[in-house]
Image 1: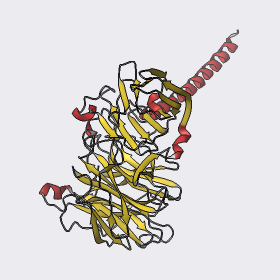
Image 2: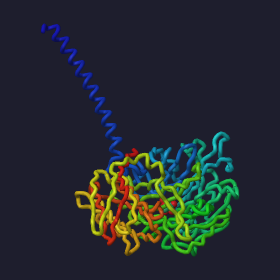
Image 3: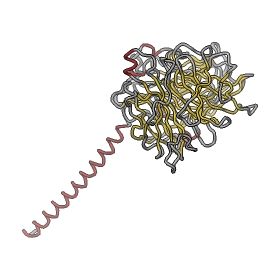
Image 4: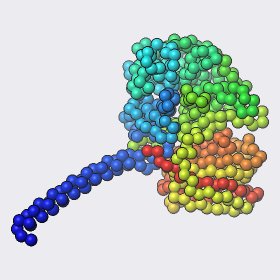
Amino acid sequence: MNGKLKVIVTILLAVTLTLGSCNRKKEVVEQDKALVNDSLFMEAYRPQFHFSPAEKWMNDPNGLVFHEGVYHLFYQYYPGDIVWGPMHWGHAVSKDLVYWEQKPIALFPDELGYIFSGSAIVDDQNTSGLGNGEKAPLAAIYTYHDMEGEKKGSNDYQTQGLAFSTDNGESWEKYSGNPILQNEEGFKDFRDPKVFWHESSKQWIMVLVAGDHARIYQSQNLIEWKYVSEFGKDRGGHGGVWECPDLFPLTAPESGKEVWVMIISINPGAPNGGSGTQYFIGKFDGTTFTSEQKNTRWLDWGTDNYAGVSYNHVPNGDRILIGWMSNWMYARDTPTETWRSAMTVPRKLGLQQQGDSLHLTNYPVENLATILKSEINRDISLPAGASDTINFDHFNQSEVRFRTEARDFVLSFGNDKGDTLMLTMDSEQKNFVLDRIKSGKVDFNEGFGDLMEMPVPGLPDGAYEVRVLMDWSSLEVFINGGVYVMTAQLFPNAPYTMLTVSNPGSEPADLTDLEVSRAERIW
Ligand code: FRU
């Protein structure tokens, strides 16, 4: 090579290398970005198909409302820490209740207090006069919690406030005349308004809780409210404060009649400790809710489904509930580092007839099927005393479902770290037991390892379905169409990779169509 050519080749080489390295740099930068995005939702225990906030503390779902093709999910949020603090309303949206998009914070605390739980509605007729003439306003009705008042020892530090949005929930303005409902009788706990339009009496209804009972108010304009009745001082569970009420109609399966259901969260006082959600089946005439129900009924027997409420304005009349997957007993201690807690999968509510009584069911919405990819499908026949093991790398992001007539079986999920999570159907005790004592990390709180028991007196004579959804830090069990439900958090030391099904009973146990599906990640 002569001198001149050498120079040209060297220059070309240098240019190529420089360009190449620029390209590589670009690639690396792109990759880093991808890594940052990925690692944000890839932390240990991060739910992959349940909603959780990108970072920091979350509790109750709030303001569940469907509007113009979008399901809004607001939630109690503290952007300053991974423990509870001054409450804001965080915000996320979904078109299908499966994939969620995180939005900026919707409501910030102001001089009237922190923004506690509440609901949202679409004011179609602009009854509030807060619309701008073009768009129906969305209205959020929530509790103000005045910390100064609480510190001073007064009793009226919780009042109700209103905020509205004329851009489909993108931005919110507080109503200038807040609070819209004072706490004149001085109830120490006076909160969590659920507002909905009652078509037959053509008015807005607000249900809120006052310590040991629910109170019902009526309004024509969302701003002036009239107290009309109360429910519950002598009904249901009273082991703790009543919180997060809901009231809605459902159609009874056999008679086709409309019945009304009131949901009340209670903390403490749940059947397996700490926070839980009870329900009452009854009637509502636009003024008063009445219920003949004698016993206390629970929407979920697991310890980790609290403060659940349902969506307003879902087009075909479906009732869809989302709950907070935690428990005030240990919510602040769970072993996650950058965010705390997740929501249940959205669940459709229904009714099931058992003898002469109706029971509330809650069961994953159909859309969830879009992310479930079947990987194993088989029948398992277990003679008395036998067991069988299924190996699968992804139990922590999966669904396991089967049908059975068996009254005795044990599902035991395990990993190579020796963690075991046990679900037992026990014919002798007529109950279903969730045992997470050896499931992984449990010692961050004394009560976390306690057995959870659920009576199952109304199982049908024939086959019934068992459906288990497991994410990286949660388990949801639905038995017989969601009439028996258990939701629990889990923190295994490694993903579960084995499922042993065993039959401790004296009769053969057949599990038919046992299907294991991988759940795709939603982030
Ligand atoms: C229920 C609850 C509500 C209250 C909110 C405060 O978990 O205690 O009663 O509005 O949380 O964050």
